[in-house]
Structures are given as structure tokens and as C-alpha cells.
Image 1 (cartoon, one colour):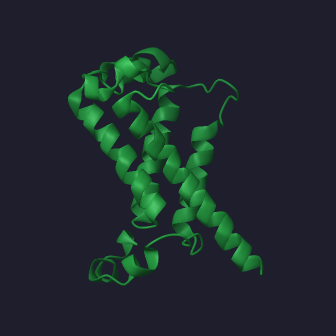
Image 2 (cartoon, rainbow, N blue to C red):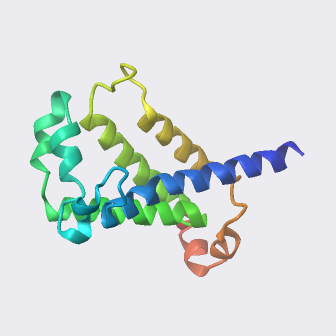
Image 3 (tube, rainbow, N blue to C red):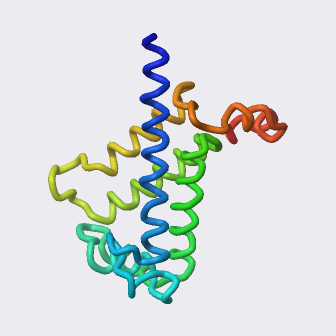
Length: 163
């Protein structure tokens, strides 16, 4: 019984973490009015990373991150990361790669805004890293996913990192 409850908790965590990546992707593309106002959407030609990189960065790495603002490469890399990591977590496939990639993305966001506002070290970015790494190293949380089918593909059998 405990294992079944754990499976549901891990599955909901996996889906929730996937949504944490997918939501900003849609908001930045279409300007849904949450973090991105309608006129500032990527489909309107506005960089999805410039606002954060120019206004939210602080601390010892501020100049480095601000130097990346407006780069088409950074914009595409960021948006591709959001959608690919989000979909992988939501579908329950490529979870390890998604966890590693998502951890790098969260760590860079944490680094860009040092020190965190509400705590000198730990903020939601670090907690998210721990959650997605727990998902990657757990055998739980694959309810409501296509992971069983995915795990039986030749690609995953040959390269287990793609599980």
C-alpha cells in the first residue's frame, strides 16, 4: 500500500515539474499575461530571455548573464529546453536526461540571481533540482506516463540513459 501511494506522489511530482517547464514555454511564446505580457511574446519578435537577464540578474555573475541577453542562440536554447524538458517529464520518458538538463537550467537561474531573495542559499530553484533528481533516480512515478512502452524500445534498451 505504501509503495502505491509513493507511486502516485512521485507521478504527481513528475507531472508538476513538467508543468513548471511547459507553462513558461507557452507563456513566453504567446504572452498569456502571467510572466509575459501579450505584446511581449516571442511570436511578436520579443526575446524570451532578455527581460530576466537584464532585470532580474544580480550578484557576482550579473555582467555575464546580462551579456547573454538578446542572443538568438540563448533564446532558442532556453525555449527548446523548456519544451523538451517539460514534455519528457510530463510523458515520463527521457526522465534522466530531462532531470540533468533541468538541473543545469535551474542552477543557472539560481546563479543569475545570487543571492536568493528569501534565503541566503536555498530557494525554489535548488528545491526543484532536488525533486527532479529524485525523480531521475527513483523507479517510482511512472503512473500516467508512456514510460512502460518507451522502456521497451530498442533505443532505451541499448542506451539506458534515455529511460
